[in-house]
Amino acid sequence: MDELPDHLVWDILNKLHTTNDRNSVSLSCRRFYSLDNDQRYSLRIGCGLVPATDALLSLCRRFPNLSKVEIIYSGWMSKLGKQLDDQGLLVLTTNCHSLTDLTLSYCTFITDVGIGHLSSCLELSSLKLNFAPRITGCGVLSLAVGCKKLRRLHLIRCLNVASVEWLEYFGKLETLEELCIKNCRAIGEGDLIKLRNSWRKLTSLQFEVDANYRYMKVYDQLDVERWPKQLVPCDSLVELSLGNCIIAPGRGLACVLRNCKNLEKLHLDMCTGVSDSDIIALVQKAKHLRSISLRVPSDFTLPLLNNITLRLTDESLSAVAQHCSKLESFKISFSDGEFPSLFSFTLQGIINLIQKCPVRELSLDHVCVFNDMGMEALCSAQNLEILELVHCQEVSDEGLILVSQFPSLSVLKLSKCLGVTDDGMRPLVGSHKLELLVVEDCPQVSRRGVHGAATSVSFKQDLSWMY
Image 1 (cartoon, rainbow, N blue to C red):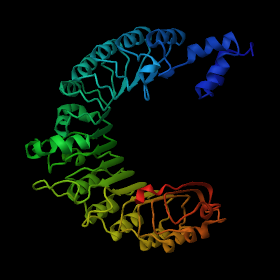
Image 2: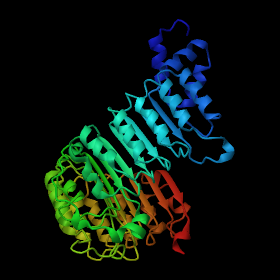
Image 3: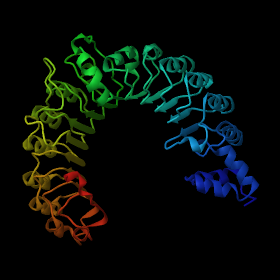
Image 4: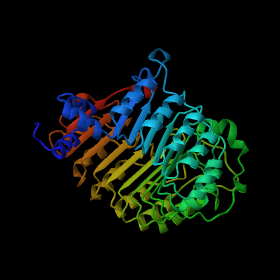
């Protein structure tokens, strides 16, 4: 081993993907220890870092070429020692000169001062902040001013990021390519318009409003009619995910939906005000859509907004079927099975989409219209490989028996389905049809009933949801 050239040792180390394996090899001899130190580019640390600042300094000196660092304090308690603080971030930025990707999760001791230290990381291109309650908009602004190469920014549950001057600054820089804002209470849909020309560079946008905070404190104060009508240039957007948002006709995020001609992934979760016209306008432009996921509010989830239609109908599904020739994944979920959207999608609308699009993955959650006739229609779905049914109570053993006739199906997932029993599973037992079968919380299906029904079987049963 001593005669192996360095580049071969590096190849060997590159094939070791777990930290334990890398640590074991590095301890086998001094040469491997030295080469591993030079080649270690990523580091994940958290509660075991004690004392935090001194331990981090030691690690930075041992691994001089670190480019990706994750600091995660999930599950932290005071008895585990003091968390990394602003001084620790100063140590990181001073000693980690190649840092390009940083994640801070549950780092409750870090303030704007610590985030300000990151402005000296001139190569920093990705920053993810998850539950950083002491960081404000001022800290994010200092980051935007100092880190000119920042391309990816995630802010998740940063409750005190109230000001949005940093959004305006990024709008002027036109550098952001991926932006994720989730449950930052003071940032609303209307604030996103301040990105201005940065919309041209964005390839991924994930925006989620804190639902509980909105419904209790903000909802009644929203005046969506005052949102400006503006053409949003978002030709580069490939992935769009919106949660708990209000979509005003012709304004704000509705403009985004209508101008994403290169969109490939769309996820709308409990978004009120999305209309058929929005979806139709989107699919007429976005010819490369591969994935659509819709979680639809029930008719009783939100109070009505003036002049805003809360429901999507078969018109949307028909447009998707007509224009999305590359659609591979389609997911529908209704928020409340007890109060479904009575005038939303029909069984025929769903079947029409499946028959016209090359859907490989279909997921239906609380879709009360899907029944055994729907299962029969899937027998002609030549591309369907993955089927997931959750709370689909109209599917019975008659429909489940037909699974063996699905041409390409390899994965079946059933959850909380009351109508299926062991009898419906029998044709699958020993058939070698499925590679994976997952059955969870279906009261009439037993562990014995699913035995041998697929190459790999996962079975769980917790019936507390029924009571």
